[in-house]
Amino acid sequence: MSDSPLRVVVAKPGLDGHDRGAKVVARALRDAGMEVVYTGLHQTPEQIVEAAIQEDADAVGLSVLSGAHMTLFAKVVELLKVRDAADIVVFGGGIIPDDDLLALQKLGVAKVFTPGAATHEIVDWVRANVPSH
Image (cartoon, rainbow, N blue to C red; front, side):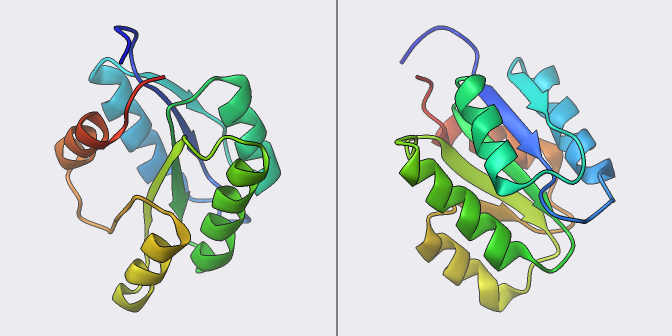
């Protein structure tokens, strides 16, 4: 483990245009001393994975409110494996039915935060579960 701060890419995949939550989480992670890159709205899984690799990210946080979470999370995890970057931890949040939480975990998503999760809970989870490169 290095002494450098954790590097987290926060991304909004797909067509969802609501990014307030992603920005709140990005700011909370930054305020907690992490280096955060927010990719902006309407990112493809390919763009997100490219940003994570270019930024030497320790983790990718995805925010999905559009209902396309199964497809989008799966594609990001798959592309990280293809790019030999499966060590980058994928976590996320959004409006995700309870029935899909276990399926996302089986796909390789480390953690999913649902609406109402406190920012300190997210920060604490990242600190405890994301090893730095």
